[in-house]
Amino acid sequence: MITRKTAAELEKMRAAGLLVHRVLDELRLMVREGMTTWELESAAEKMIRDAGARPAFKNYFVQAVGQRYRFVLCTSVNEEIVHGLPSTKRVLKSGDIVSIDTGVELNGYFGDSAVTVPVGEVSQQVRKLLDVTRDSLEEAISQVRAGNRLFDICGTVERYVTSHGFGIVREFVGHGIGTQLHEDPQVPNYVDRKNENPRLKEGMVLAIEPMVNAGRPEMKVNSDRWTAVTQDGSFSAHFEHCVAVTANGPWVLTRP
Ligand code: MF3
Ligand code: CO
Image 1 (cartoon, rainbow, N blue to C red):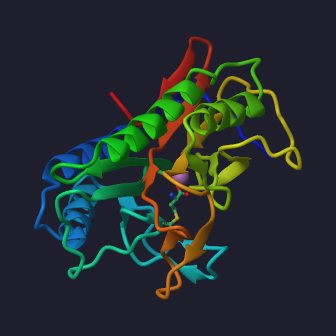
Image 2 (cartoon, helix red, strand yellow; image 1 turned 180 degrees about the vertical axis):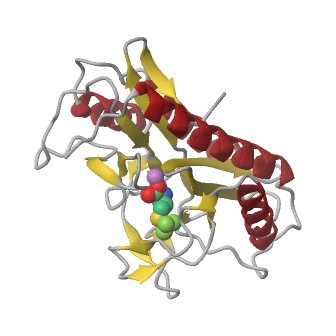
């Protein structure tokens, strides 16, 4: 069932969204070569708790893995797609990219967003991967309006990414969001004709999150049993925003 939020609920989701934005913005600016992904994790946890919120990912039960996630962030480096585990041993170096994904619960409502950040100097091909992934999300956001359908969002990401020759991860999808981190509907980054294609209505909120590989779309799971990585070792990028359907078009809750 796809829930629709009232104006008052959307204001609460906005507060959660703005907190996620503030955290990611701060972390983005912290990223530099020589730091560890654990420094990002501990800074994020402090910011979230100082704001009176709860880190939504920490202890979240992930069905596909059959376990609880133990961290505030997913910090996925280079060929890691998602669920990269923050670690004191993971030192970032120039030429890397790091996807930082986090969620919060504030006053009963969730926010969820991700950015991928270059470390030092990255190659032109990697810059293009980041640009195409970010732009595919922006194109999808522009489709979020009452009367459009879910497949307008999914198809827009799919067409944009494949037209640039990159691979769309199929195993992880976006989602509705509200009083739970993951609500209906699933929001794949491709048109999945096995799914329903509901019409978008005012008050719906979707977390749209393209995960894009520079090479082939296939993934595998690391020996840590969590981290999803590209099978071919190509770099992978991830951007995510929560977007509400309003009478005035898309409202991106996770940016000012
Ligand atoms: N990117 C995932 C999502 O938005 C992260 C949540 S899974 C968790 O759904 F394991 F990190 F909690
Ligand atoms: Co999400």
